[in-house]
Length: 252
Image 1 (cartoon, rainbow, N blue to C red):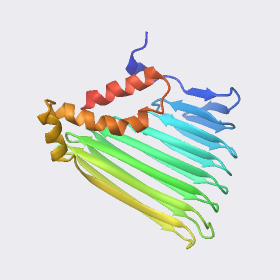
Image 2 (image 1 turned 90 degrees about the horizontal axis):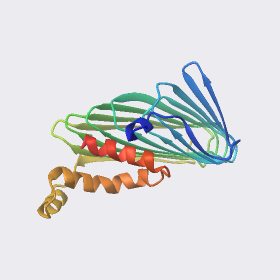
Image 3 (image 1 turned 60 degrees about the vertical axis):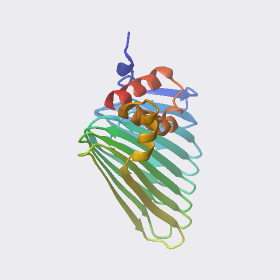
Image 4 (image 1 turned 135 degrees about the vertical axis):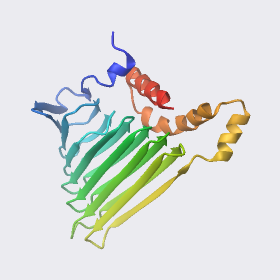
């Protein structure tokens, strides 16, 4: 019988019509072509992930680790990624928005006492394309998190929208979080912005919770549960959800 933590290293899970995606394994790579709406769960793997979203598909992809991921999105397709990283890692996430009305949303949650580097790149290669990168980091003990994010809108790719947001909580005297946002904009008729907010958890909030009988770690966990909900609520599989919750609370 598999334990909860074994599940996080399990097989690719796809929910949707049987012909909604095509999957191919080749050498050290996994190729996924999304042809119709689907929900995809990708456990931690040492393979490179290549994803192609065909026209007008709308799908969710949940990943339990920061893996080398390369994405091509075509006209009218909209893909939402949710990535949860709880261990030491350094990897690239690169996305090309290749045709009009292609869009991507990347939501990343990192909770670690180790070192995590997230390289993220989105390239707007067509008009009317949209990208939103939202990073949330929680560094404990001596953990270090780096969000290295680049968004590029090419010349003549008008009406495109490129957004980058990073937030971080530091839960240790030696912990660090850095955000390195880069916007490369070669067109005037676009919207592009980035923002970052990083700091220690509010001591007044912690004091209030601890005055109600909670330990410091219990107070941390309660505050973080509100952050985690937006990631874990989208997981239908209770075993996977419980495995992630177990692993997260072990870090704290």
